[in-house]
Length: 513
Ligand code: AHR
Image (cartoon, rainbow, N blue to C red; front, side, top):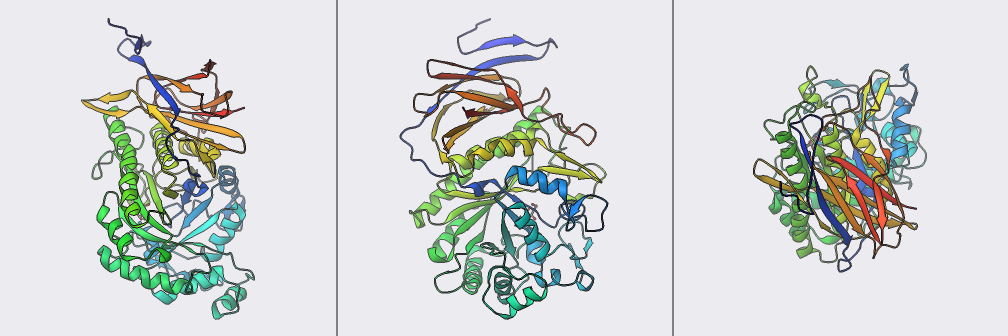
């Protein structure tokens, strides 16, 4: 057997499984400009969908489950720990069916709403504007409200802006006071519709760009003295024409963000099980996750053409893994388990966003509780934190930190004639602490990663790891701590070279001492 210095083969217990060790090198890219990694890249998304809000976040004041104004206390604590910077609500597709005035005032007088897109169930509107904004306040997170453009009206959205963000006397602020809230919640972040190319109204970009301008005009005044952050409904994956038209047709002073939605999956029409998947399906999922790099690069290039000063942010307000729903659950509820594959998606996607933080200044993982790539799953009184939660918890050190651009030489992760870069990384510095996040997506090979510390301000690091023996491993309600971060000792520093053994499908986060 030919063993060269880059390849060390070791045979594991079960004779047929062979793991190899390959090498990766990382150093600071001193030629690349730096940027601040906006904390808003670490945003979340809670839609009225399945068990996301009702029976997830919100159980009602009369529930036996400990709650604060109807919101589960265990969820509040878990999200506080994550330091979520913003929370998008009420949709998603649901947003363009939602009429906010149906969700204020005495709960027994609120009309019902049929959740047309997601399961067709009837909701009682007991979780509305006050309940959501009070929750955001309790979490210390910025609310990101998605306005109804598809089936709403200009006045409806401008009234919502007044109701939630203004203190000047007006019919809307009087109404808010009548409903028990004196001071506004100072809401600044607004989505102007959602997926207008699809569930938001099946519009052409030119038509939506005009509509956007109309809505955006009446949300504020001549100069946007309210400093609203208005996000236009953006492209579906690689629909670059959509971004082009919005950037071309909407004046810079009317648009603070352009959205982008892109999910990770095996095949869109054959998504496969969330837990019971094989390596080929894992590989296919990682391929779509890594495509995010190409997507943000190309959408950013179009934005650069119209906005070289990078005034308008690229807002990836829906991203994450999407599989078949758990067997026996409502197909419209999008409930899925969360395995080490999801930890990989989270790790590589957040590295991509960090590394593109000059333009990507906000993002929202879909979704917070019990829906798609959730950070929290609930079952009755029980609640578990998913592998994705733990990745976000380790990565929170990057929030509002200064990006340290990296040069990364990675071995290839190969399967069935295709290959992907095995190692992804990003680094940042904040308050004198350097954080380096490493991900190895290779399902079989450990990567020995050598980080040249020459251009780093810190030389001594500790490490934490998220890893597990099987890629399909996950936390369950009976066994909630299968996957959680652990101290990691397989790092050593010799003469300014920090060497880290990054096991197959693992996330390692290094923190300077
Ligand atoms: O996140 C689930 C759905 O995915 C959202 O409602 C929609 O915006 C997207 O298609």
